[in-house]
Length: 247
Image (cartoon, rainbow, N blue to C red; front, side, top):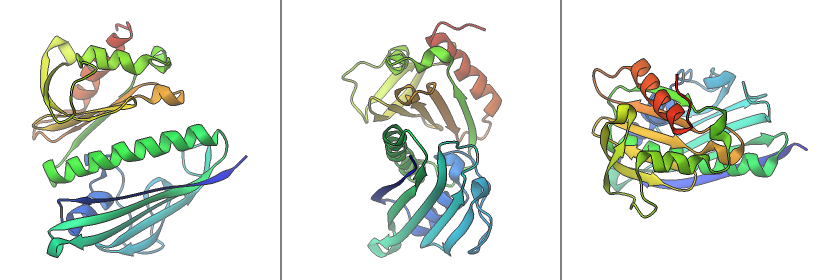
């Protein structure tokens, strides 16, 4: 049965309102995935067939879409960003509201959306404070069918070489593509997600097996010579190897 949902988050970040505005309207590849910028007016076209419902730079941006494109279990999706200055405009307070209607499997859909929201907004803060406004090269990939198993994300943790007690915020040497060691900061960790930050990239691991989907990886690469295809192929081989699939 269709049912409404609402996910609300508030946070402060060491970035100006203008920097936050630029990230959520034009720099989405730095923390989420690349999207066409919205038309800068109420009623303008937004991402995924949405319509801009609020446009007040750099304070408020919202969009709304019915029958969300490519989302069979959702008939309404609304995203609303409110941004206010703090500390004389040197910092920003952000209120993010994601609302809409899920068609079925409400508890599972809501749980997944809520937990993804926390990870994406954390990545937004990492992007704003570490990398913005550097251009980004984005790559994303999914694991094989075996990565939908209940314990599939534990295999990712083990393949990276992370111990159960590896602390968030510490520097780690993880086992990356090609068997090499990748020096990174473990910037996020939960049973559902792992976030690694290198000097030039944010590498995100998604335990979507918890919601019946394959494990995924996204790479936000800010190096001047970044190659999206090379990143995709390297991490795809790595992820397939975690589950014993070799091309």
